[in-house]
Image 1 (cartoon, rainbow, N blue to C red):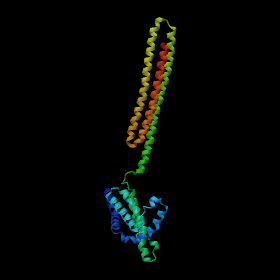
Image 2 (cartoon, rainbow, N blue to C red):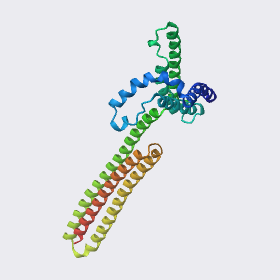
Image 3 (cartoon, rainbow, N blue to C red):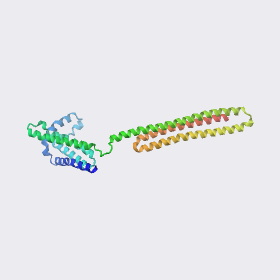
Image 4 (cartoon, rainbow, N blue to C red):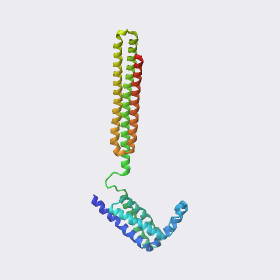
Length: 285
């Protein structure tokens, strides 16, 4: 298929390379056919274009013939070699429009033979225009940029939802563990403080040991909560890292959002653990 495409592109480009080279080297022979089109189009362009642009528009047909020939030459070489073939085909399509209208205006011919000949050449150029338009859209079996952008957007949306769901799930888990930790801390603190106030000096040492054990348990629970949040954040980071190979900056934004959410949950766990410690300290006093 690649050999067939290369051969077909070269065959299609051959006409434009020869025609473009002729127009660049010998524009005088084409000026008479180009003058009516140039005289009709250039004044209109200069009238509606900005002043800075209008001053740069050539007014002589010879210059336009050479410009059009250069487009054909560059586009034909690009199409034949395959280097920038789609852009080259687009340039050829652009050059064909004025060439066809200027050289073969069969509708203005009064002689039947000339009208028929120009009509045939006009239709030939229309066929060439169709061929180069197809070539300008040929991706050689690969997905087009538009298709890849569409699929990439769908994948990004899917991955974003997955990261958001994982982070939200981890946040709910940390919040639940933090609430349980706080409730347990308050309950145990109240019981231990009450026991400490109401007991005799004989049992104070035992109660203080219980307070120390409760503090240790609370610290461990807080560490577990922080570890759960950190684990969720790392998982989100790994998921975003894999997806970043395909989506770049968009995946990076999602990763940052996941990190911020996990950091909030970790901060909440730390705050709850600190509150528990303060309650225990009040109980000891």
